[in-house]
Image (cartoon, rainbow, N blue to C red; front, side, top):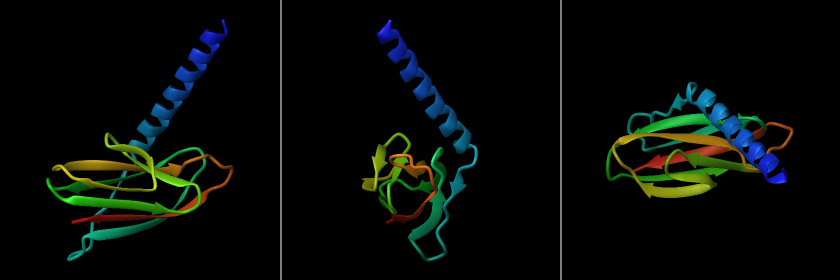
Length: 119
């Protein structure tokens, strides 16, 4: 009986995370670099109970450097990596979604700075 309760709890948790991610995906902000620049800095505030979504389109073979600063902050690149504070990878020709949120949920909003560089 206890195993069944744990299984139900885990399924409920996973489904709630998917629901939040799906809801946030509809509001994904597109990042565009200023003419002549290959990087962007996004400053924001992450709420305790959801994530923020940013997306960026890249060409194949570029190097992406993504880093976040702020107390208790992390990002996830959909299909690439989860819960990081910095990550470098070689891109494909596609649009990447970057979800920003609190690593350990607090009761307050948390400010952050997200740095994205594509070269």
